Image (cartoon, rainbow, N blue to C red; front, top):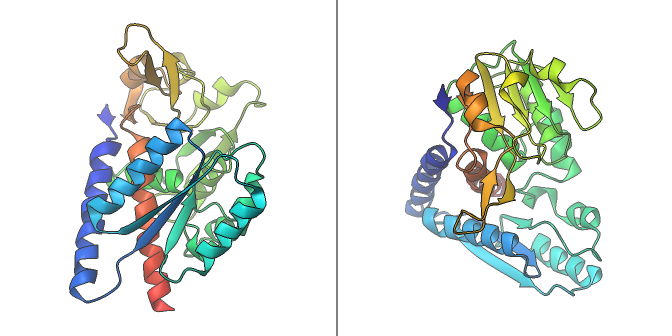
Length: 293
């Protein structure tokens, strides 16, 4: 069993990007500029956005944090999105989710300029991904593909089972794993909460990518020997014995499933760190596309 170490791999990718940014500076070129928009004071969102800003500083990107009040109107937020779309100094930006309940998330995401949508959520970019055109891949699926590639996990002809059909992870993963080339060329089954007899699929899977959000859902008796496990789940579980009062659990019963796996991602330290690294990779791509234009 080999651990797919997202923490180490993400640091490797950041170093590669940093070297490229240094070369851009040496050539007198503009360095990539990423902005993050956060509405309100959600603790998890603040932590995540702070991590993104620090990563930008670490690799030499310019970064801007746009912090907006919880009670901002939808119209005012849309005006801010318009300003960011028209800011020529900005290569890409993200709007941190979730947004307050009085704001329509879909309307906000649709308003983002696809050329600056480094989260890869806009339908224009999703469509390009499905057609295998150059575009911004959603950061978490992009990170998973990088882990598979850098650890040389065989995907061609393999049966991949994706658990979860969200637009952020499950659905794009099903597209990416079935596309031509490496990593890809898999036969993909997309399963979800309405799938009957899920174990029939997981027991026959060569690769399982689970983004369900149910702690330790996938047990050892649900997988076959040699399976590759990608665990996207991150759930806080109360634990009085932990100084923080909680522990982070993935969708996979790691202790049991790891004994049967050929490759497996840990939680934390697996897919999570890769998401930020690929957001930075998308921002670098955005700068390159803008410079070509």
